[in-house]
Image (cartoon, rainbow, N blue to C red; front, side, top):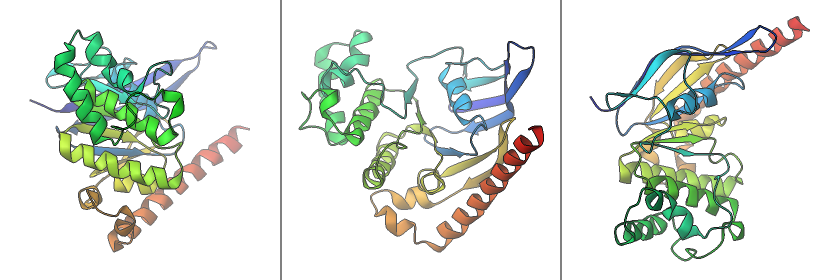
Amino acid sequence: MTGLVLDSVSMRFDLPNGSFVQALEDVSLDIKTGELMSVLGPSGCGKTTLLNIIAGFLAPTEGTVILNDHVVSGPAQERGMVFQKGALFEWMSVRENVSFGPKMNRVQKSEYGPKVDHLLEVVGLQDFTDKAIYELSGGMQQRVALARCLANEPDVILMDEPLGALDALTREKMQGLVLKLWKETGKTIILITHSVEEALLLGERLIVMAPRPGRIHKEYRLPFADMGVGADLREIKHHADYGVTREEILNMIWDMEEEIMGRTEAAA
């Protein structure tokens, strides 16, 4: 069976004073190959913890993560990560960054070179291959990060707030690029975001998580990602169903944030 399965995943962090934080509780998901899923929720609901467990950076205290019939027990090439800041090698050129993974895997340059050239063209950086990372804008650096991730040919791409630090125009362009890459590569993509609008645009499947302990509160199946491929994303936002769903989710998360604030005030 292909795809990604989370089976009753829970995560508990034990603290030095003997107490603990239950970050996630009984999260189960069945994500088919090629799905584009966005994850939303109030701060502290365990979104990034969940992504780190899928990446293999954290081992869950309970439950199992299975990818293509294999239990995830640590980081591996089959799961690529794109962070909020690209985590690029500043001293290397654009081409060297994108080539890094294949080189570490001892792939011959004659094999990975054309692939790297193609990826740089796909993300619109074919004219910047020899530029140093520090010479690029934030949006261009995230394009490098996407290309570097794809160069490793992962089955699943994990994105932790990858567009959060970008200005509005650049962010919209990058959203369009993510949709384009999703359709062209057929990769499974899981994207964490704090933006309801972004989650609606970049999630054919959207998960809203409840506050700590983090768990799935509601799931949506949406048409906007498919509609947005190659289209003007601003036009998608004018769709009647988009506005209705946006308000529903905003109110849902607002109520959760109010609940969290109420707990904090009561504890004080």
